Length: 311
Image (cartoon, rainbow, N blue to C red; front, side, top):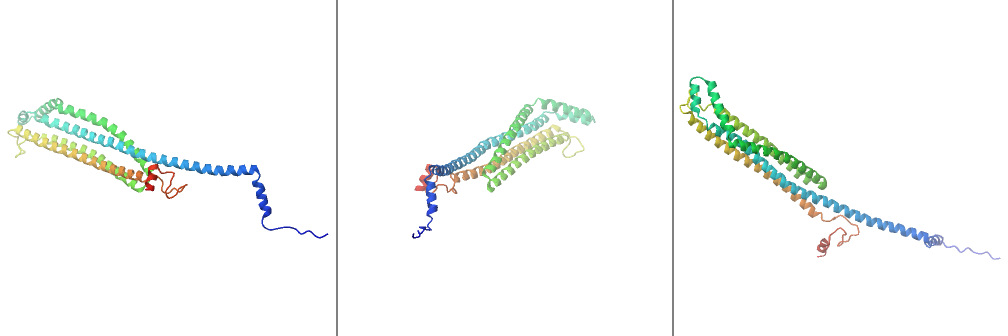
């Protein structure tokens, strides 16, 4: 018997045969299809989630941008109203005091001083002053303005708290150096307003102190401090004119200072607002995304954006 030669070829037919048999197995085919389907579904889900995240991120930025604009108007208006009321309260109170001094007959006080009855002179001036001062409509106006300014100050505190909460949200959402710089400028501008409020308090306190100090010298002769004036009421009238003029000038000056500080804060907030607006417009869609994209097609672009690219 002739030996039978082995018909073997080294072309991978055994492996190929195995793979073919596996592919012909219905169960294997189903499993492969399931894997491929899962991968495709996962990719689609990723795209959906990515798109949802970007929309959510954009919504948060737009909302923060809108909140800043709305809160800005309330904040600035409250600052403006507060300063006007606060200055009115302080200036009206001093105005009432100066007006009360103008209604005192200092000749009677001088006559007491001429007989060295200083106690009687002081009692006379104090009684006349208090009666005119307490009846003054300017004092009542001062008290109303003071009460209104104090209530407004509490409301202003609430608005400032919301304003800084919005700024914190903006810093977190936008997270860029320029935004941080703009926020820092706003912080400095608001600190200046706080310092101005303290300065205004000190300014009017100094004016009030000066009124009380100069009141003591109305009965004295202006050219000779060691004798009493022949006509102290003339000194009184000059005192009233001078103090009223100084008070009006300081009132107008502090109002202008307050308006100037508020305008600076307005400018700083507006700079941030425009910066955020520019970022939002520049981020209408993702420029770095490459998922299922070509040079002209991006699943994250709106139809209007696609139309622009095709032009």
